[in-house]
Length: 581
Image 1 (cartoon, rainbow, N blue to C red):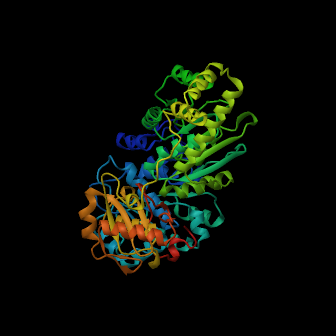
Image 2 (cartoon, rainbow, N blue to C red):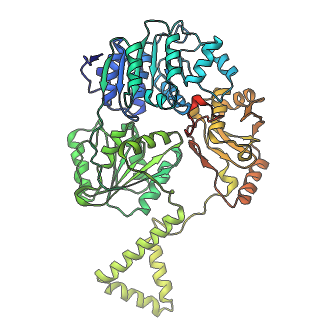
């Protein structure tokens, strides 16, 4: 084992990645490499074996996925890279990340392989030609023994969360798999800790590996109230504006992934009447300082910023930090929320959590040692209540502090004309609130809430909670059997006897055809385009269930407009991790 000989890089451009990967990284919102990325990517691109010791949530998936993709031969439809993970959830997460990073490279074939999914379907996909396999040890062993997994072209092996695989009893399986691989492949081992069993594997299978250890920094998170809201991507702006109307706070700092996103969110907030400004990496120092001055003077209420742009931002009166987009690594989360609660003041941090981000939140909680509490999105009634309370406070303050003699005379004149004093006051209040009414619009009826978003089609599946169906089952079935990208699948509403799911219109025929004879949880299902009668059934079911909202469990929040990703849970087996959710 050797100390790392490669100097860390400050930018992704300096890491030696090709333009297609750099474009994907920029679109994902990675502004600068995390420590594990800056030190790992050059070593792996140089062909070195590697032991990376880092906590989960530090960005290690990109650290190994980007070098794999750069060295991939797309003309060769054989398995060139194998990633072993302890759980199905992580296998799906890694496979999805690789898909995202490869979007500008061409048709990269990535297959997640795990138990609880029909092995025949996996065999068919493997036979058609796959570049990268991401899987759990037990199912990988099944394929190797059947001869359906061929290591002839294997060049790269990753052991992800090796200590977790040891804890779950998979370490002998991992060794057996490594023994089946041809000599000479490059191996990268990632683990939060390096117990003796992991060290033994490294000594036996890795060749003069580079050792990279990312130390856990001492956390200085102040006493900040940390909460999260389950939202879909489409709900974020509405959730943010409701928060801004119901949270009593001073200045607000809103974090997003990219500079384009920062500008877009700031513009949308301005359109809704908020004094918001964007702050991103393309702005000059003078422009940034101008935004900060206006925030301190009260001319600006909200700053929408990227991580890099917010570095060095030191404003004492930031009362709320909103993670509009979840950070890419755990340290960034700590840096973000540390912008509030300064100088002994109370601070709040709220995280917007979309369906596939539960794991990242758990990583953050483990890293900080603090629990992030759930909160509900403020309702329109909450907003109306808050508006009324604030308006009453402003009236009280005006009566105490202001000279009202001229206005009293006006009211007396109107009273002299026979108008009731209370009605005069109510009319004046109505005029004062014309730009922002106090009343609240009614929430949509259940029938409306089950309609698909624009560009999507709502499908009906005749299986629901009573047959054990969970959100991950629906997403997994559609993604794996119909070939629809997991991130493209939209809202899912699960009832006792049936389920609604939104998919993009472009995939409608494909889903209906390929899932015509499918099973979910070992039970045959039928799938069709949802009809008004199905919608009526949903409304009635919701009434029978006590007005309960669509089910919220698994890795997805199920209500109108989710548009997020999900995970296929399926039937559990030993190689997927007992007790993992």
